[in-house]
Length: 97
Image (cartoon, rainbow, N blue to C red; front, side):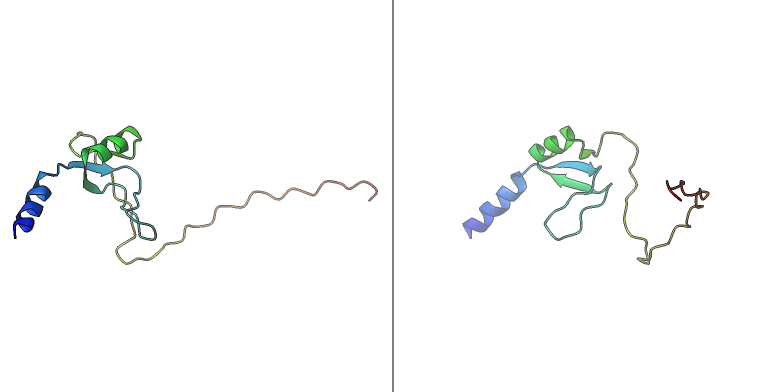
């Protein structure tokens, strides 16, 4: 029982910092990443590393909100229209023909 109380006290003592992702972050191999604009609570050392590498920004930095990137609500993909084809040019003249 005393171990349970100590575990709760240790869990409360861990400091975290709120950051907002600027790049997709993978939590584990084979899992989908956290999308851009996700607010995460991480330890101060990790937050400092991410801030120095511009992977994330502080949640209270006052910067504009970053839009989240993710699938559409119905998980569909819309095709973009094909661009106009460039004009066709004649083939170069072959020697001897």
